[in-house]
Length: 235
Ligand code: UDP
Image (cartoon, rainbow, N blue to C red):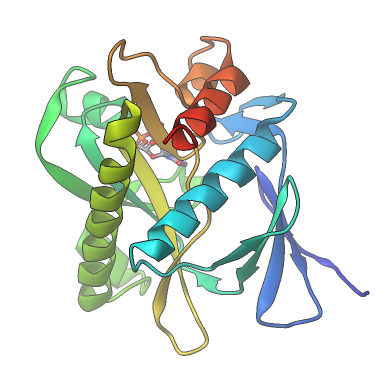
């Protein structure tokens, strides 16, 4: 079987398969923050994120939200449809935290009046800046109608995830999605949905159960990810 590394990112390795439309994603234990400045290998993280991300994509499919996800094939790997990733991070926020708190001066934990969607440029050299629609159009990354589709899809995913997580005692503070274009040019949900890319707080204690434990040196990173997976499987 001929398989080659197509791309190696910070948290995943992408391999070709015999089918040109399908690629294999291997989740790594590598954990990075602050544009790669902070780095650690966390035993078991790849497996947890593969399981959690597979769970979310399968659940979203049941809710009618298509994604690149095909199936989980091992503890750390999944098969996904090959798409051209749009270099935008689509961030949806229900509760102020992180860079939004810094930008607008709202304390972490303050509820947003309505969920909001923001776009960031996936560009390490520039430090992933937030972009306005006009910048995205100037760069030719997406049209205004693409952006409307991305906003609508992000808010739909948000509603479905909120419905899933609420009875499991988890607050969905914010999360980042990525989208790709398939062969026909359609925008398809892609990448991963995991504690690396979402903020999850325990609804009772507000304890952080996501990558902020790594970013902020709180310890117990993989225990927190395991707790998220346990909650997902608890009902
Ligand atoms: N996020 C991500 N990748 C990034 C930046 C952010 O997955 O490169 C996620 C992050 O985990 C959080 C949300 O997007 O759930 C919003 O992150 P924010 O803009 O607050 O940035 P941060 O404070 O994490 O730098």
